[in-house]
Length: 294
Image 1 (cartoon, rainbow, N blue to C red):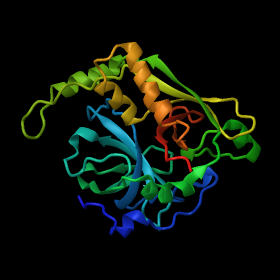
Image 2: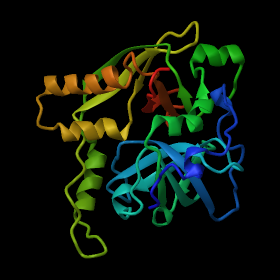
Image 3: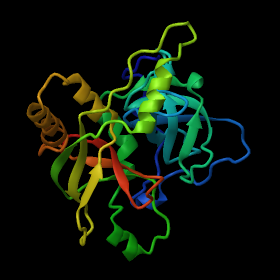
């Protein structure tokens, strides 16, 4: 990994990003169909919480802004087996990474790519907000609210967007029901496997104690209000770190972190939104953009 310092002008001064005041326009215009592999470079802005799949115990989805001036817009990386990444390839939010990828088969969302995990390289980390904002502020959109879509007559829905709320009303917390029967079956099957070095796989993936959702109003005049589920990796990771707390104290800790801190009066928050494949009209909160209020 290359260490970032003030001399790294590539990281601190990205290629100019085209403004995207309407999130419907955000994202690469085309994905190659016949091209076997494409080298992608992006600033990761969100990473979803891991979940069980058929082939891997833990997979995550990541998304971010392209660092390639010839392929501007949003990029989504699907089905990344997070435990199979080497130490040099482990990545987090606001890391600049590069990876070989193919267009995600069967995913109609044009920003979706399936990466080859062993080709992933973590290049830099943008630690300060003043380094991140030139990348992201041009992509702040107004709204993906149904009344706004109807007014503009947009037939297509954006699949990724960065939307600033007019007002955040609360953080809703409900108990997680636990893994489904099918997910539990997958985890049991994975526990019997061994890694390439002959070591048995580590403990099974635990579900979080709470499902969170933001309640907010967007900037659309007739907005009826939104309640969107939080899929953020860090929301689940915080619950695991505080596993020893009773339910009432854990609720307080989550509200302190995700309301008082991320959406506090000294911040200018916006939500990274992602559209569901199974329910195209539904958006989830993939993460929070929370630079200091100017």
